[in-house]
Length: 113
Image (cartoon, rainbow, N blue to C red; front, side, top):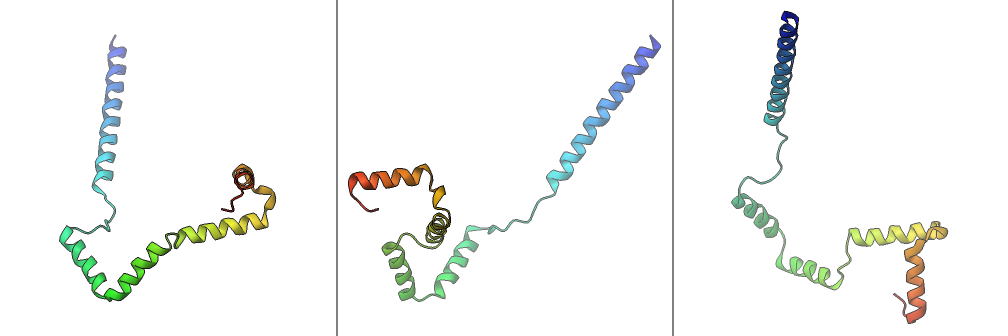
């Protein structure tokens, strides 16, 4: 009987020690935080936006906006399409099901998209 109580107390001690260690590690990692690159206040964000806009003339801003409207495929999307075209030129056998479907639709509709 004495052995069972001693064994039970040892298991209880080990369990409590494990729970305390887990809690301490949780507290340790919750207090460490990575630096935040977000602005602290909305006013600071507006100040940064205004300073960016003040360095640019109204004509340049208008031209950029008009360019975006005229050509919605800019930057990353154009680069992606160029990379895809290059890839399929180098590997024509890997056109895949989608390319086959596009060709079939173009043949049926007579359109060139």
